[in-house]
Image (cartoon, rainbow over all chains, first blue to last red; front, side, top):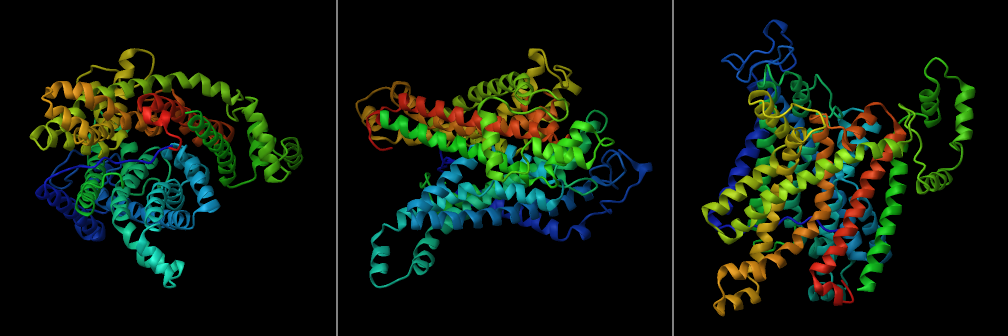
Length: 284
Length: 314
């Protein structure tokens, strides 16, 4: 099986920074929305008002209302909280797990490396979403199980990249000389290997957050993970599907929210890659 | 070359064994007593009693240590006895085989669509590097990887079925039913392949043999067809292995959106029915498909890249 390989992009410096900047701007805006959701949302996202159900977008309800008369705009804003929380925490867990596995595998090598890398191969043989779906489905609904399932299927690519980097760096002369003057393994890993994997790991994790948000939305759309009445974009889309003809705004706005969020992280990730590793396309 | 093949096959065997091991253990994630669940499925809530549960525990070997259970289960799997669906009572393998053609149809159609979009677009973006066409293609590709597939499917459904009335909203059977699900799946895939084709082309165009061909005055068009394309396609073909995984992932969601009676829908339905035998079967089958595609990719890789055939170590 092969490494996931995101092709490099060669843009001029001006556009690089513009991409990263736009991404950073939108991500910050989304974080702000998530943190200040109660102050920004015009209505209570859980308050039902059956008299006002399925309203089209208007001044009082900018995105309209759903079948239970809840304000979609408020629900989309509160949805940022769930999406960002899941995306960031799951990515942190997977990236940390991948970092540890990759360091141990690449630095110590030998049998441990062989075993860990076979495990990675085996896990990568499953389509990630299929495995996450089965795990989340068996564990049952809920935020914790959703995040556990996503983290379990998400750490392998980090492990591979870190392993590759650790493998190549530990052969370098400066590591050899550090060892010669008595530096220990932990010291070498901390001083020489970690700094060299930080940049690619940061880029991967940024792109990874978008990926996790997409997968979480898919699982919630399929009815796993967070359940209604929770304000979750994926679940909102699946309950809006029944009203696709009569009230398409139920479908359009939560989907747009997912797309903008994922796009922002992809912009930021792509931009960061071009800044940190111009031309080093094989890294990620 | 022989060594390359044996190495790949050995790695494949380990992966295949690991896949069965993992699938077996995932099933033990489910909370509750497996014997009780089988009893519940077999006899129903009213006839559930302690004796029948214990009987099943012994019958199915659920009282044995886990590794013995795994060994027994693996023997059955290899013999093609994948158990019976708890909800329909039909053999799991039969249920899977009934649904497989629909998924195959959908994924192959999506693959063709994605290549039709991504190859010209990726090549164009590379040849017209840093021009408006390049930016346009890359923006499109970035949008493509960021749009949730199920949402795109719903938008297509809204536009092409509900508003324009060109295609059926959902269902299975005719070519017209296939168009929207395949297009949805194909678009997502095209986004990834476009980026890959472009970067691969860019890399090849910087190679010395291309530069020297240019220096010899060979026409740009002939360089493209004679030198660049074949070499640029090597990573694209290699990626097909990963793409197969992505396609199957996408199929799970898209089949649910369009009520397409394939494996993905079967898996989702079996999860909600808590049909453990069927879930296990589906997960195993999906993984087996990915492993098979990767083997095919490895073999074709060997033909595309002669260096592999002659090198001892890869």
